[in-house]
Amino acid sequence: MSAGATKEILEAALKLDAEQREELIEELSASLDASNLGEYWEAEIKRRIDDVDSGRVKTVPADEVFARIEQRFRGK
Figure (cartoon, helix red, strand yellow):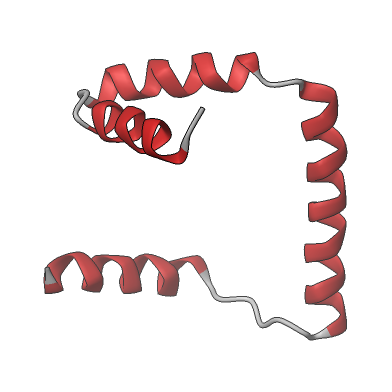
């Protein structure tokens, strides 16, 4: 499938209401090979834990994250 076709599908999907988008996400997720995703996510989780443990990244408290998100939405 071409990038253009993928973009058209995404644009159409974004026009669906929230419930329809949720159903679509569930169907698409179920269609993926879970074993491949499991290996990928295991490696990603390990990498993120290592980043935090080594100090390469700084964690941000959830209340601060939510405050930033709220501020962004108010700014639009």
